[in-house]
Length: 253
Length: 302
Image (spheres, rainbow over the protein chains, first blue to last red):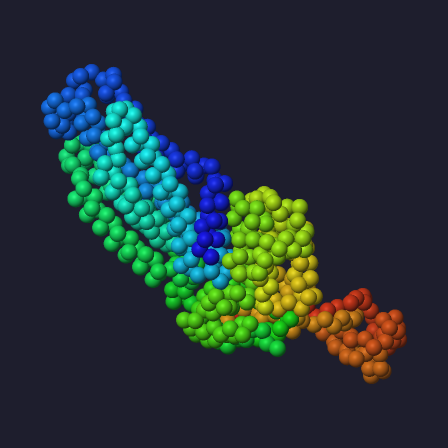
C-alpha cells in the first residue's frame, strides 16, 4: 500500500512541470552562482579582491588559490543543507492539506489503507526527489569546484558527512514538519510558508559563516546530525500519535 | 437479512452535537434514504457508518462489522462498504483509468485494472478512460466516483448527495445509474435533500434534523383524486367500486376497484359536482413538510 501511494505521488509529480521547475530552480542557483563567482574571482578579479577574501576569511598569507577556493567551498556547505529541508517541503506541504483542498482526502481515508501507510507513502515520495536533486546538485558543485581549481578538492570529509548523512536527516525533518503542519491547516500554501520557516536557522548559520563571524566544522555538523535525528524521531512519534482519520477530516484551522 | 442496524448513534464536534440518537435498520437489497436539511447530520451519520468517524455513543452493525464509541469500524468495515463522497475527489493529473486502478488497489480489489475497465464500460466512460480527470465533465466525474464506490464489490453502498451541483442531464444520468444498482438489489443508503430522488429510488427514508424524526415508507399505490366544487359525502353504493374512499377538504381520494369512467359516472349520478379527476400518489413532500414544521417548532432546524 505504501509503495502504491509512493508511485501515485511520483506520477503526479512527473506530470506537474511547474512544481518540478520550482524544485530545480533553487538548486541550480545554489550551484551556478558560487561557481561563477569563484571562477571570476580566480581568473578575472583584481589581486586586491583575492587578498580581501584571504584576509576576510583568515586564509594564511601566501596560501594558494586552492586554499581560498577550499574556504569558499566549505562555507557554502550549509546551503546544501538548506536544500534537503526546503525541497521536500514543496511537495509534502501539499500532502494532507492538498488532498483536503482537492477533496481527495475523504475518498482516500474511506479506503482500508492505514493512515500510517498514507503518511509514509507521501513522505517517501517527497524525500526521493528532494534527495536526488540535492545529491545531483552537490555532485555538480563538487565537480565544478574541482574543474575550476584543477585539483580534486571536494568532496572533503565535511561535505561527505553533510550530504550523505546530514542531508537525509534534514530532509526527513523538513518533510515531517511539512506533513504535520499540512495536517493542521486548510491551505497548502499556508502549510508551505509555515514549514519553510524551519530553514531559517540554517540560513542564519550560512549568513554568519559567509560574513566570517563563525566557522562551522565537523564537530558542529556532527552535533547537528545528532540533534536533527532526535527531532526526526520526535516528529515521527508525534505523527503516529496524532494522525487518525477523524482528526484529519475535522481538525484543521 | 439486516445489512445495517444503528442504535442511538450520536456524534458531536467541539461540544456541538451533529446528530443524536440515530436508530434505524436497512435490509439487505434495500435502497434507504437519509433525508434532511443542510447541517442535519446526514453526512456525519454516513461517515460513522462508513468507518470514518467513531460515534460518541450508540452502536451500529454494518455488513456484520460492529461500530461503537472509540471503535470506528476500521479497515474491515471500509473493505465491505463503498462510499460516494459529496465531491468526486480524484487526482486531476491522473487519467480516469489510473484513478480507478489506484483506488481499486487501495481497496484490495482482485484484478483492479480489469475491474476498472469493466466499470468504465458499464458507465459509458470507456472513450474518456485515458483523459486526465480534470478534463472530464461534471456528470462524468460523478459517474466515475460511483464506479469507485463499486470497485471492490461492496456489501453496502453509501451515496452522499450524488446529484448535488449537477446539471439536469447529468442528474438524469446519475439517477439512472443508481436505479440500475437498485434493480440489481444492491444495499444502498442514499443521503440527499432531493425529495423526488428519494421518492423515485428508495423504499424507505429516515428524516433527520439533528436527530431522527421519523422513518417513512414510500407509497407506490396510485390513487384517484376527484376534485369537487364543494365537499361531498360519497354514498354507500360507492363502496362496491372502491377499496377505500377518503374526503380531504374538497377532494376525494379513491383507491379504485372499478374503471375510472364508472366511478366518475357513479359520483356524478349521486350528485357530486366534479371539477377534475387525476391520478395521485401520496407524496413524500407532504410528510416532509409536516415533519419539518414539527422540527422547527422544537427548534431542531432554522
